[in-house]
Length: 220
Length: 220
DNA sequence: ACCTGAACACCGTTCAAGT
DNA sequence: ACCTGAACACCGTTCAAGT
Image 1: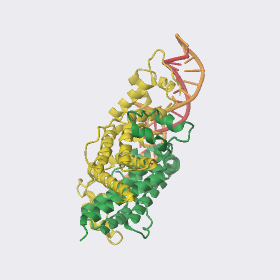
Image 2: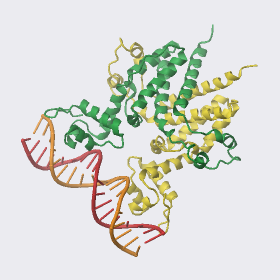
Image 3: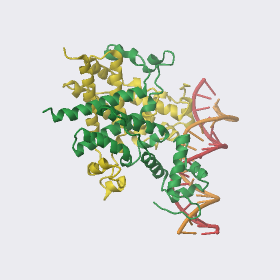
């Protein structure tokens, strides 16, 4: 909470910006308060005059990163195409800051930050004729679906299938007696294409949303 | 990679089990190799005879935790109800181990582990008449939707709305000129009910999946 | 062959002291 | 009022030494 700047010109904004740059470049694990202070050419303890703890600083970094997300305008197309495009654009921006992504799972109060995706998402919900509470719920479904899938994204990279004897070796023996469907489909458990899986899942969610909204209004 | 056990009876399984217990009880941040060694009543360095690094150990802990997930049998009901129930059951088990959840985003090769959810999920996909590759894709959509949403779950707890002047204060001013829809719906941005949001989003995804599968077959 | 103790190069944070 | 240096209580990991 404290604020001060006399000789160093060390504003909270500059600290957050430099911290964000270091994390983007080197990763969250690499980052430390001491390395940040070195980059700022300041005593490690001086940072504590602006932020009470490392957690508070990382929180500010996460908030700033989400704040800065800017999305392209939505393309023309059907409602479902535009809703899918919104999720994809948001995801691409989150992945661009992938080293910061780990913060999003723990950061407090980030939800309000992404004003532009909120705006585009709510406009889409209004098109469906949703009441205000339902519009916000619908937007949140799309938003958190996207953030969750993005968080999980790099689990896909290391899925086996390449390594010799890979898949069976890493899944282990599947007992056809207790898990018949699993055994039947085992050969289809190839490596995961994270982009394709996100796209497919988003389309299904969007389709379900579109249908729920339009069918409840009924055709006159 | 090394393995050994002479005087200490220190099997890799016991190490993983104790580590998992400590993380479940005290959280991932609290956990350290030295505290683990103390709990095992062994020299800190002895653990390194079984696991090459802390990362390798945490990977084994995450894999064991997912391996041990056991789901209740699916209830009777429509296809959509049962598919939703599968996602909810998986999520409840993941949340029960919430302190381990942070590992799931980074753990390698965890996908194959949850044999029972795979079995139930694939059976559901077969009911829709999906080909084998599509069945696996469909299951993966549900599975990773659930993991992603669960990872993001505790972001919801700290959403403002309670604090005096809370919502507006933490979202900041919304410019009605540039963000008209946002401004219009601002009062609806109350705190997030994570359980309800997950349930609603899952139902929409499941509905979209059901419809995509059944409509592509056409009605004769 | 199996285990340990001391040591290295780090952390986040506190607090008395400087200017 | 603003900043710092030394210190505290930790980390993960290496490696020579013990039995």
